[in-house]
Image 1: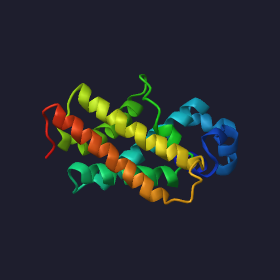
Image 2: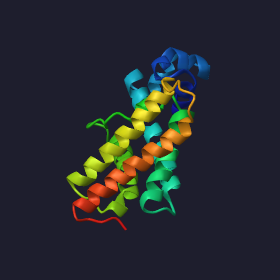
Image 3: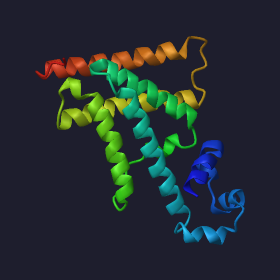
Length: 185
């Protein structure tokens, strides 16, 4: 059932997810879905967790075998590609985990760990690591969000702009790490 909801969100967007529509697609009556979920909020939570898990897996695979700036670039490219391939689910991955949902906490923690791992070469820790993750995440989300909204109307190469943005963010993080006495290497 969650797989069908995931497919529906990918096709129609998160706002289109309803129990009635999902039941129709599954060829069952809507009340029968309550054997599996407590309601629409529970179904949305399940789709969110599955989306975060999938994105974390994609990012993990992208970063494997890369270190330093290469890992961050590979992760950024995979992030953008996943967001473009899953425009309905992507917005569900950017929300903070729900404190009362162990599965969401685990999926969100996995996403955090993947990004932290890609940034590991910068040797940032504590607040510096959090700041670096926030900067990278905000940059990627801003670009992906603008791109999805069709906001890049100029004829220039959007892929080139993305690559330059990622390179600039990485360079900035590397400069900050060196300034803090933790040279990347």
